[in-house]
Image (cartoon, rainbow, N blue to C red; front, side):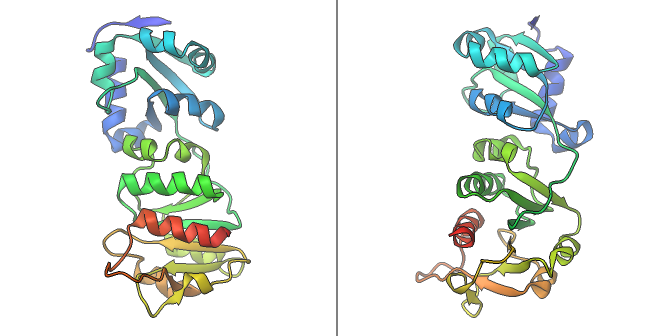
Length: 255
C-alpha cells in the first residue's frame, strides 16, 4: 500500500469532499463509507470499492478483513491518524474509509414494497432501511428523498442501504401508476377516518407509501391510491415519526 502523509494530498481532499457534498457524490458517482463495520459490510454487497484509506492502527486491528477489502479494491492507501481525523465525520473515527461506486441500474419490483415520498431526514431514511432489512422488505422505492449515500443515512441504516434494492423514481405518481393492476397502492395518513392498517389484507402484491415528515403523502399520490390507511393511535400525538410509521407499516405488511 502506498502511504499518504499530507493532509493536503489531493486524494484526501477529494475524499473529504465526497463525505460532505451530495452534489460531489452525484457528479462522481462515488460515496464514502466510514468505520470498520460499514466498510467491511461492503464485502457482502453488490457495490465495488474504488479505493480504501486505512490507518496503520486500524490495519493491525482488522488485518484479516482489511486484507480482504484491499484485495477487492482498485487501490488502497495507508493514512495517518491526523488525516483520518480530517476525513472522518464521526467524533472518534476508527480510521477506515472505503470509497465505493454507486449502482447505476435500478432494481426490479418485489411483491411487498415501501415507497418513500419526499422523506428528507437522513436518520429517518437510515432507520427505515435498517428496519426493512430486519423485517424482510427487499425493495424500497424512493422519490425526492435525502441522499441515500449521506454518511448519516449510511450509519443510521447500519449498512442496510448497501443491501436493500432501490428503485429511484423521478415521478412517483408515474411509477406507482405503472404498478397499479398488479399491485395495491396504499398511502399512510394520520387520519382516523382512513382505513385501519390492521384491517388491510396484504396477501396480494402491495406498495405502502410513507410521506414527508412535515406534509405527509402528496395529494396526487393519495388520489391514485387504492386506499388511505392509518395506524390507530390512542394518545394525543397528531402523528408518528416517519421512521416509526414505516416500521409499523412494514410489520403489518409482512405478518
